Amino acid sequence: MKKTESEDLPEADALPGAPHPRHATSLTGHKAAEQELLSAYRERRLAHAWLIGGREGIGKATLAWRFARFVLANPDPAAAAVREARDLHVEPSHSTARLIAQLAHPDFSLIRREWQPATKRLASEISVDAVRLGLQVFQLSAAFGGWRIAIVDSAEDLNRNSANALLKMVEEPPQRSLILIVAHRPGQVLATIRSRCRRLRLDPLTQDEIVEAAVSLGPPWSEAATDKIAAAAKRANGSVREALARLAPESEGAGALIDSIVAGLPRPDPRAVARLADAIGGRAGDEAYRAFHRELYDWLASYARDLPPPAVEVEQIGALWDRIRTAERETDALNLDRKLHVQAVIAEIAATAPRR
Image (cartoon, rainbow, N blue to C red):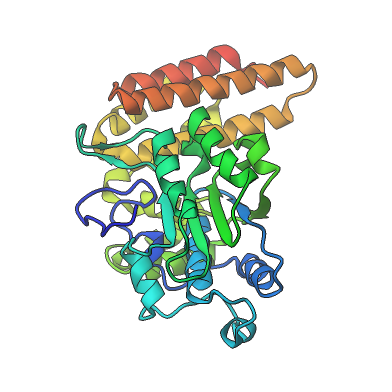
């Protein structure tokens, strides 16, 4: 974890072409959540583990990095700098900020899906070995005498074994340790982990906030036409990541197809499904492929909530969710045909979910 990043390698927790959250110098929205973290630290009420939940791409990781940077830069909650702080900002020129930006801070660890040189691909999940390696930061004395911090991004990428390895540390944390867990679907996180974390739920961003965030990223996002950015923000469901995906040239047209298919579930137009499968079947459609699954999981959750008794139908949708998630992981891990995967998923939804 503690290594200088290779700029040419993809990072699992960053949108291709966009700055990684650790480089963000500002936070768009979420002022109340930021103040909650600051107050908890200042008043010495800081939980050792936080589950930061909300839609993907709304700034959860940016807030987690911002908090980690602040705590490491200000290890004494009673210090004047903490008492007088209005937010969690740390100047980029600060030595702590520079070390974190380089993934070189000795008291910090990042747990995420890692690049695999042998396959030249990102791992499909966070392995138990990756969790154990990342948690080693808590087995050492703090190099700067302050806090030791780990960010997990994201909880959805943990498998059963790696989640259990994380649970052991969450259950018995050492003094002055802090674990920040980013979760796109906190309800799906292992219940024993959830129960031991303080939960911080972030709301989707407004359209104006999404536009502000997109423009602040600079080229190529800020170079898009104003009306195009506004249109992407309107259809982004409160997510900057989704807006940026809609602005990417390779995703052009895929967003509308995804919207059309989701609106037609559980039995969408097969012609739209075929066009989408063709559009995101190759590696060029990575972000659209991820967007398809995000929308799909959101639809399944909404569908299950609206189902009337008996509960057996809800259980069937839960089992369907698990099968789709497993198929998604296997498709990525084994480099299977994404086109066939998309078509198979839609067919299974049509066969399992009764029409409302």
